[in-house]
Length: 544
Image 1 (cartoon, rainbow, N blue to C red):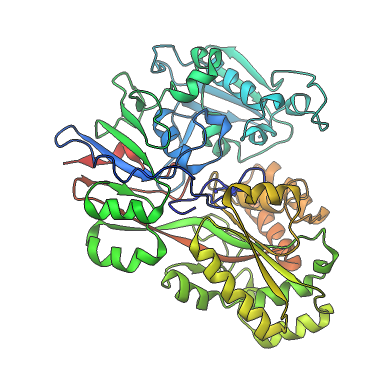
Image 2: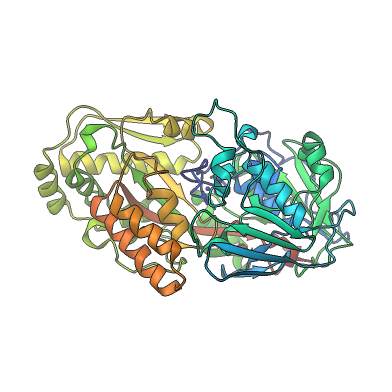
């Protein structure tokens, strides 16, 4: 999907990390004003609490891929499917999601649900929201997530200047108020998990009728409702919705999401008791936080992986041996200790350990620090000519720190002396990658949109969507076969075979998996922060 936590991140979206994308991507600190001076936690005895994060970009569910927005949206909306803290799919707004062939899906809506304005939640609420999201001229950030559904191509002509042939997804049919039938372009066994992504939230008619007002005051169907409008660059206040009938009934009376432009300022407020929950403590402050917070320090596993990508449209990086040599020149464990206090997990696969399908040491020697072998591969590749430019954003000071170590390793181990850094403003970084104007290896990350090997592999490496310019018919074919399989074990076997193809070619090298390190105040308990788009399980937090 980011200083506080990953901005969603990825190939088809701005990966800021990620939690995400998420990929997808790239973790951006908002350029907003800090909120450190305003208030503390909820007022004593009012049953509410505060949580800190950077400023969201949008609050229309399908117009954002940012985890900062997801923090708020996950409380305001119940999608058809949600995720448990372990990352398993569970029905929320849906009573059932079924298919006989993985292509045509029948979705039954749980009866009795209402939006916060009293409108009933029906099958049409989902169909209307998805059509609005998938319509190309709307240019929504999560538009591409609807590409599995029949009719998407007619709404999104390849020539962006051409008029769409349709304004509704032909594959989405409202059978009756409680039933939705969805037809995909191809069988896709991961579809139920895809439905957990925030973009697939329902939309009320009042919201679609005035999207500008909806952005400032979203009307959802989830356990929380807005209290007042979005106070931009300051805070967003949510209170428990009294009419909520779903499975996530809050154990508190509300949460206020405070916006921070600095992770350090947010951590200072946590220490001072002006903030109740912080999902990501700055790496430099982790040793202190672990000591001072005690059992209020909240470590967790994560699915966010950092990678170093290669612009294969530049012929200087065409040799897989060159890319492998660079991978084997990087001391992942040394960087982990020097920059991340030894808490991160050096990558041994394209997939993090929390994702089903991760195989320990799948990357083998290629992800192992071996200067001797790296030098042999470098010589075999013919070496590198010209200036090696290393690209990364300014979102985190740690990026500069480890890029310095990488540069020194390449000088010492491969003899590449002419190396220059290209530190790009976070707000411009992914636009640069999307335009393919970079001239050297670049930092990229991914966090799970939903917990699936497919979400990492297809979105990051497939020929149609990867940023590297890498094309592999073998990889694409294996992913397509895995997606179509109705046997989950067979699908995993095929996803792993596709992973092996990518590792063999190394168009992008895995570096490490993040460690989640948050904290809470003494006012709150039962704080759980997941590795997925849900992030903080706000409804479970107790206030005392």
